[in-house]
Length: 169
Image (cartoon, rainbow, N blue to C red; front, side, top):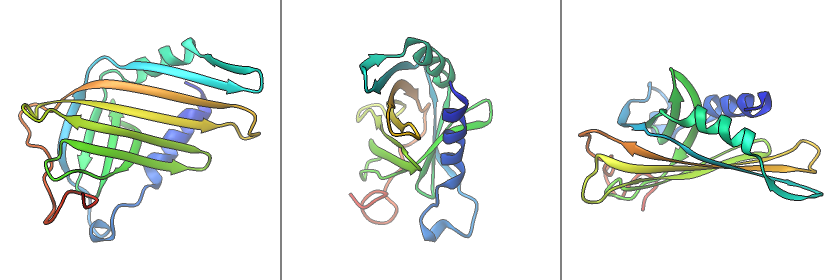
């Protein structure tokens, strides 16, 4: 992974504000999952066309395999490995906590994704991230696609926070 991507991902992690109701305290983990082997794909778009970057995809695979995904009560999901946050994004959730869209933006990069939890077995799930980066000169872009099986153990899914889910749907 490039130094620019690494620096940008860390910047995302430290710059996300939670909802005002949680601003005064330290956020608590309401659900945690262990990721399995990551699937990774990296598209590169330039003025010469579009292609895959297998070398970067291999590095992304290694970085995101075995990560820990934590859902926090301040409306943020963190993805970390060896105690270091790789990605943090705001999330919304349905009432059952089985569908959690994610989003973050910093500078010319966006992070979107979703955590899905199995309706019949909430200990199992799947996480996907879409990280899009525009080069500073605007002449090229990279799109990272990451998918991982998630094991939540015996934890309950985050439920609604008094009405609807997080984000109100």
